[in-house]
Length: 362
Image (tube, rainbow, N blue to C red; front, side, top):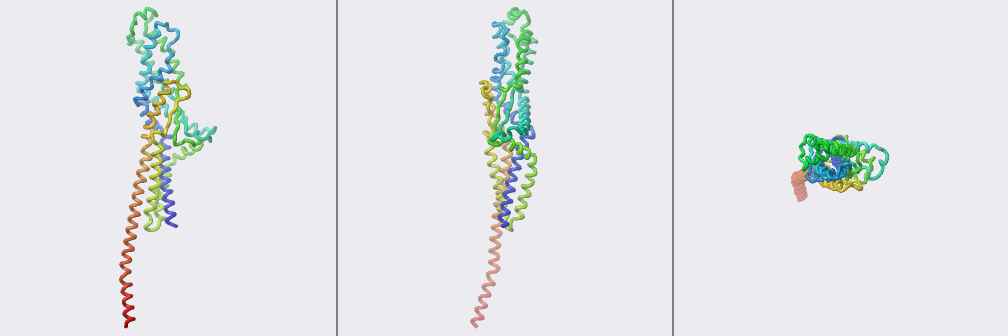
């Protein structure tokens, strides 16, 4: 009975270790911005993602040349604005913008978890909306500022600039800044809350889980240290409950449960754990950009969360090995004890038998 009870308590210790590890990961990902910011910044500097940014910018400003621009100047205006998309892609501040946007999405998701409306809908806890309109707005605004400064300081050497100045009757740089860039500033301001510039993230590990359940998990994750302490106490309790020379199996069971939990967690948190989708009817540039984001985000997310299941797996292997070694040592000690007892008890029994036989013969 004590052996069975000790094994059950040992299994509980391993399960508590799994819960503590999962809680630590959830707590880090939801209550602190560092993990998500690190993933986002790694994705933002991915070459394929950066290469897809101009496509998004072209989609949102392709028709931004004002209609009042004369046809002979329209091509020159488009040539003037063409560097805009690449400037946004090359702007180092865009990386910070992505990081801030991801953190805003994290906080918005936490606030959404507290909304009781639709909280019991299956799968509602797995979806996160990530807007990138604010990033596009800040990037375009910064690039427009650089272009405007270059225009007003006549840093652009436009073909036929003298002829253009004769046609429009004004300095081309000032004319372009006032005529072309002002509508683009207005367009950039509209992008912040654009529903077309967003992506929907789905977390496979939460697939089928309602929002109310996820909310409870997130709240409980803040207490993961208590689960870790309880795991240690449960293992100590299992050792105290185990009969003498039966403690090795209890340690091995705790390690095996932790090991299985770590392996399952590592498998569930691989590169395919997060899926990103563009909104329905998205422009080709936005769709291609979201596709590149998904391809970069999967490995980045997996690398960021990998230390948690890896640590649990390593700990599980160590405890399992220690338990098996302890069990073997206990078996060896028990066997030596039986052999020693047999050697001590054997000769006197034989001697008594001979003495009895001698008395009988006499």
